[in-house]
Image: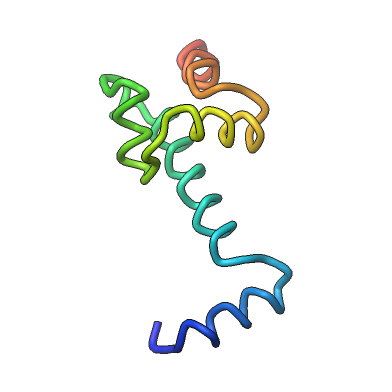
Length: 82
């Protein structure tokens, strides 16, 4: 990005967001996309957790439900039913 860490953090702070919150949101969005994409149906949720950059499945479940209102498995079933 060709800027210092301080400049990056200040830029995010001006927008009212933290760098870490942005990264978590991006990881959760990636996981949601994988859960809903047909080409990833064969992957177990544990693999999606790892591919989305989470080390702990329980943390992922908690954050996912907080962000999207349902557990990852529930979302996968919801989109498969469509």
